[in-house]
Image 1 (tube, rainbow, N blue to C red):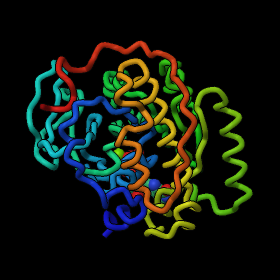
Image 2 (image 1 turned 120 degrees about the vertical axis):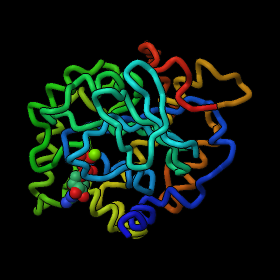
Image 3 (image 1 turned 135 degrees about the vertical axis):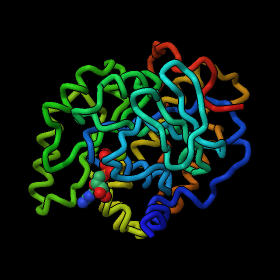
Length: 300
Ligand SMILES: Nc1nc2c(ncn2[C@@H]2O[C@H](COP(=O)(O)OP(=O)(O)O)[C@@H](O)[C@H]2O)c(=O)[nH]1
Ligand SMILES: [Mg+2]
């Protein structure tokens, strides 16, 4: 029921399953969802990929980062020492104490454009920061979710200050649960305050109500009103830039970035919502940390 609402709202699903996408070993941009516990990370992930890949509101279970990619392989966990085992759909037996991340594969249109990594809440006192720190170096972009009603707390700032500077220009701060702030004046104030506090630390600050986005059910005005439209467009722009920067260094003239099928696919997936192609910006070369695993993340 809820899942169906998400699919309609996001509109990413109808063309899923282009066969070459799953067999491609191309490295897609990786988007990490970060923020405090209950800030809406899993709800956002469900909205984007059009279905639930993992339980929303897991309180008893502490999940390690869940790394979602396009495909249909069975889920598996990667242990701290790089060992891999398949896991069942409820991730039973998966513990943050011995698992670096869980790899999940879904034939979701959105995942043709980028991988999503749903991180555990940063402020959970039972959650060692090492749990997300050992995976964050694999990401290119962060979507940081912050409760609008108490946005950008000291605890959030403290974690963001520890991040490599290269994330700042490629990450978005999302003020979630905007529906909880009733008056337009107060919503404007929060956005303004946070914008001034995070200047230079994020590319943009975007207010969003994920609940309203889910409820919009294909109504473009309600979708735009929720803030989801702007969020999706900004995300496409970012993933496009990250992909373009890398493609520019690695890919021969035969496969020019502007002809990549991925872009067309995502824009189609958004349907009638017109997405303007952003100007190509060459991103600075990024020094990559050592890979998490010895082999590519997508199984052959
Ligand atoms: N009112 C409101 N509730 C939201 C919004 N986004 C998420 N929630 C709810 O907040 C709770 C926690 O969300 P979840 O995605 O599990 O947070 P996570 O811990 O960051 O993954 C869930 O019950 C969601 O339904 C929103 O924009 N508005
Ligand atoms: Mg979650």
